[in-house]
Length: 139
Image (cartoon, rainbow, N blue to C red):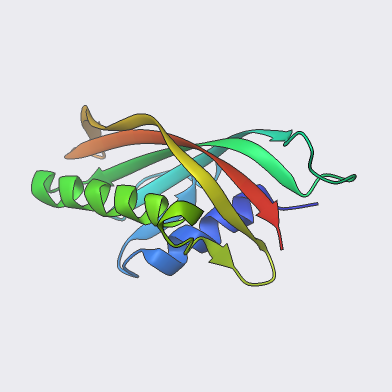
């Protein structure tokens, strides 16, 4: 069975600047390193017509960007948006993680918007939030 979280982590890690901290939302106990990108994979229903056992799943992907610099947070949100769309097979399909799986059928669910300024450990931090729908496939 495909590890959805590992696939998304690998695709994001391969495409993001290494100075950006990346973590699944459920693994973040405290936020102390910026910039930070968190993600949550939701859903995971088998694609109709996929094989038995299934090899493709429809999922949602929620992404949050946190940064203590507003302009840089906005730029990272733009970069992440472009990165996720680059995974779509219509645009060349760069969403491949060798030995794990690949992404396809990317669609916007909610464009990145500034979610406001949050206060974390006496710091003001800008948060952007966005989400996508897509299919994830076994390798």
